[in-house]
Image (tube, rainbow, N blue to C red):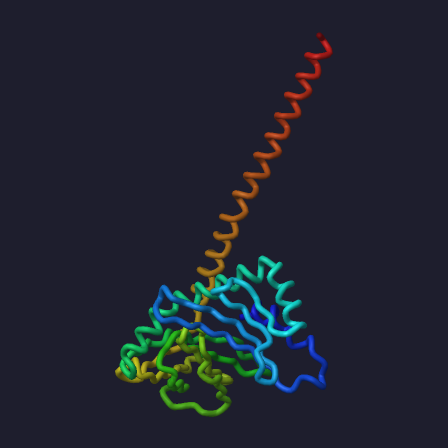
Length: 257
C-alpha cells in the first residue's frame, strides 16, 4: 500500500549507493482461516530482510542497527500503525473470496462489470477517444475487441494488461482513437470464461435532452447543498443579533439601578 511504501522507503535510502544492489518490498497476507490472519509488510535489500510490520506484534521491527532506529520512529506514528491495522482487516475481508476460488479450482468465475464511455470528443484536429473498461473479473484471461458498425476495428487500439485489483480480482482497459461519423455504431465486445458467449456493449451518445437532465440534476444538487448553508448563516446572524439586543437591554437596566 502507499503508506506501507512511505513507511519503508527510508529503510532503502538509509544505505549508501555502493552498499545497495537490489531492494524490494513485499506485502503478505497469511491465513489458515478467516479468524487466523497475519499481515506482513516487508522490505528486503540484497535478499536480506531489513524490517517489517507484523500484525501479530502490532508494530514495525528492524533487523539492523539502522532499521531498528527507523522502526522505533515509525512505531511512534499512530497514523502508520492505524493504517497497517486497516490493511490487516482488508486482508481478512478478502479471505472468503480466496477460499471460494481455491475450493473450486478451474470452476470459479466472476463476470466482469463493463463500462464503455467517450473520454475525449473528436474535433477538427483530434480524433475521439473511447474507453472500454472491465472490472472485478476472474479468472485473469479476458479479451476486449472493438467494433465499428459491426466490423472489427484494430487500428489505433491500445490496451492495458490485466491488472490486479488487490482483492484477487482483475481489471483491464482498452482504448480506441477514431473520428466517428454521425450515426456510426461503436461497440466493445467482451469475451471471458464467466460468459457463455461474447457480450457486446454499444456506446450510446448522450442526447441534448440527456445533457439537460444532467445539468438540471447538478443544479438541483447544488441548491440542495447551498440552501442549508444559507439557513445556518441566517440563523447564526439572527441568534447573534438577539444576543446583542438582550445584552444592550441588560446594560440599560443595570444603569437604571
